[in-house]
Length: 89
Image 1 (tube, rainbow, N blue to C red):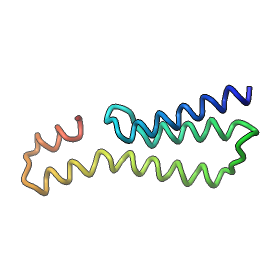
Image 2 (image 1 turned 45 degrees about the vertical axis):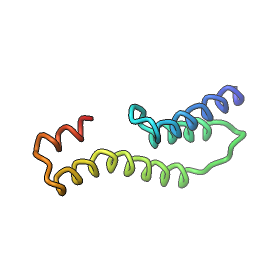
Image 3 (image 1 turned 180 degrees about the vertical axis):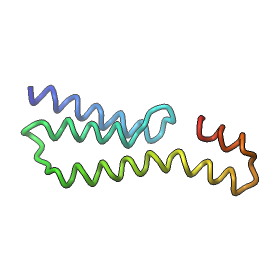
């Protein structure tokens, strides 16, 4: 069971790294779920503090990934619909 969780955890981490490049996948959260799955194994020791800090960073990056393009559109003269488009896109 540990080997199965280890493989699935590494696949999630690799998928998260790919999600950092591909705009379709939420990279930080996918990588964090990989870390959570790795935490469930006895092979990779982690503590709850590490998981909490990385979850906070992943959520912060995920939120900023939507907010920063909208702020940039507003700052450089984009319309309200342009802000909506950057958030949806």
